[in-house]
Image (cartoon, rainbow, N blue to C red):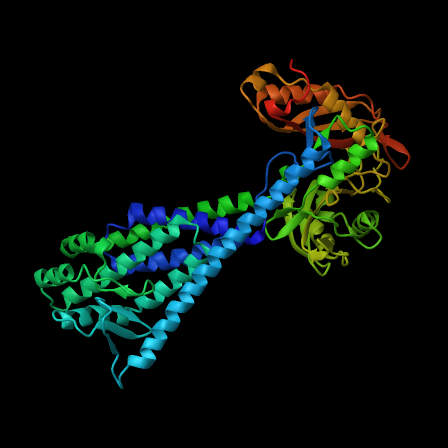
Length: 569
């Protein structure tokens, strides 16, 4: 998804949340200056919050680990052409949505520019020396302010003095510039209904504030209300300006004029917005976390050759964006010398902190970083930490990594996320160490690898010689497609989704430690575990010539009844 569109959606969600807070807690108060400040500040904050992302740590295993058999779609009836047509349709839909959005932006931008130019033209043509009042003929206007001037109908036969006094209050308060800001935001959020509600509420607060100041200056409430009613049927000329009489606000203005003033303690209500801000930051941070669900693909059992299946998998992997950078692109970033050289660099430059050794602290630190368009490493963060000492060392060594060859999408250099788990482990009781891998092969995910600091006994993520299923990964996918049994109850209830299963290929090549990292439904989860548990033996992975356990991960997609997968149970 386009980063601008993601940002716009997040900002829209913030606007909606703040507006609901305003309606529930502030709208009925007579503290108009406070309400105006809240509306303006919430507009600004709503467009700043999407940039604030707090790294969130998750308990348990990091899901993005090991070989990722991306997007296994167990669909025994799909034709090869279906995948391509689906992707083509998705691309076309995205292009159409972008075109519609940009068309709205352009139309509203031109409309605003036209109105502003028309106002400026009127000011130049009609203004008189040392006079901030511009009288217009034949416009049937009630009065409005713009660019520091008051516009009224020169044929106004009654109440002109009171109208000018009312508009003068708008002028002194700078309400026109509030409306101008609102119009600019509306250009980019034109599809968001809450922007129009914001616009209506802000204009209402302006009128309430001007009314209050006029009445405080000595105007008679009865005559003032009569003047408003007298002017209600006049029409406005400019949408980007305040005016004396808004037909849709008449009733509420009358009520607010006579309503009992809110006490000073009502101002403390504004403090209740703090939990809302915290909630929004947490939601945005959660939505920005990387997940292996971003990866997708499709496998069918009708391909005649396993090599063709593997090629199809590679061909359909679409670019995936998270936040301000990609997760998957056509050409992934490349460290000088390849992933092997990167792993060797980190292994050779990581020092086990003495303090951690003395306290027997060990574990795996997950570091995520961004490879920018110029190949430099940026935005380092600890996705999963162990101890501040080990976390700091992991951050230090990754921050020293030399420049990459940047990733590219459609031939253009783009920022791409990388993630490196670094395992710190002390020698076991027998005194033997597990050596850091001097030469490792990259994982299929392209941006996920592991460096082990000597001593860890847990399964590897990447080793010198990765485990190999007889016939390769395409044969794994074929096996899963042929042996899936879609649970009858799930099929009848049209329960679909992707079950993420992680398993370990142990030192003998057998599959064990099968677990569900992300489930969909108990029946589908159980079937995915059963299916993966039946996988035949692999050729085990090897490190330093010795067979070692290695993690694998398989997302298994259960399709709809229309795309029948396997045979029912």
